[in-house]
Image 1 (spheres, rainbow over the protein chains, first blue to last red):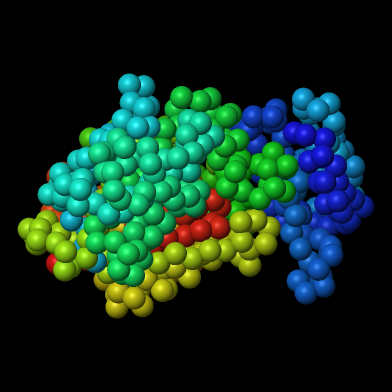
Image 2 (image 1 turned 90 degrees about the vertical axis):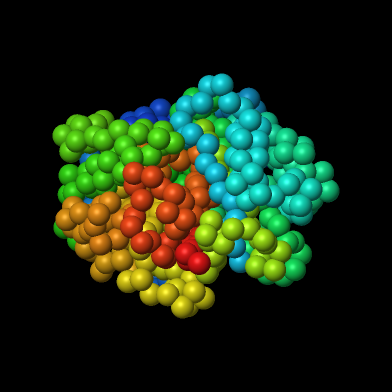
Length: 101
Length: 382
């Protein structure tokens, strides 16, 4: 990925940093797509984010970044983590993953 | 609106066939079946999702026209992820209704097995949102997220999914064109390895090469034998958010409910009148949600109804007699057209060992992405 694409995505990559929510669903990816190495957990989190029109709650998806297994209903917080490998541009992409609060 | 010709290639890992070979086989045989010459075709639509990424071919309409010797017709590719084939059929119907075409050849085709499963999984994720791709999700993972919520809501367990694969493999054993034309037992399904929890290998449709084609004509332009002609009574497409996170409900596909409601209205048909159906079982949880969303049973009762055999060959409403995506195979852009071909064979009484006696109304249900697009066709015997 070109450096400019990583730069542009920064606008959205960090917007859930520090947000507190709860796990509403989860899946453990064993067979990962190219560019990822499984197994890893991906969680769907319901959290009060930006929109006021969605009754204060939105859902987001992100990778799990904790040693404990995610559970449905668990309170979680968005933390800064590396989310991609350095491509041909050499730029490492950072974003938000989730861990237990 | 009539289907006058229909054909499906063998589905599977077809090492000796290129994408162009598959398009030629399906298209030429559908025209032959319809008794239509290439010069009579004035519209060629190719349902395909991945030819650009997997084959390096982005001009598929013209490639198909060249392969089939159709030189004067408008020809183009139609893309709507795994619903590309269904949407291509819908666009042909609309073009004929609008008077822009009289004889349309719709081909669904995909060549997937030349690439590794990781490359294909990444390419398929082109049908998902950017956030879902960044999270390292796959489509198995997206449906796994839905399955988890469905399990909690309706008290289902992983083992309850297994009857979908057993049923569809049993049906595929009656279909020589299926990728996996053999039955599997419950134990084999339950013992298969996990791909993305809670979904295991036998909960997932495979990676497949294959093509299917139909010739669609209006009533005025056809002189075909009426006994081998099937009517398209309804053709409807609906959309929902591409992002799973933005859906109103995670235990149903909203686009399916919208499309089927419009289709039943257009055809003047109720769910109880459907005799045979091909539904989008890309994953076992998808078939469970589909039979509910299409009105074949109540929400939350799909898995029990499948386990009771209500949707088996010989049951009250046979579902996925082709073997479905799970066992017939899922060459993504071809699937929506293959479903229509299977129903055309059923309504013509030409489905061989898996023929439903006296079938008069068939329903095809094709989904793109995790539910961003849904297509429903209702076909009637004339």
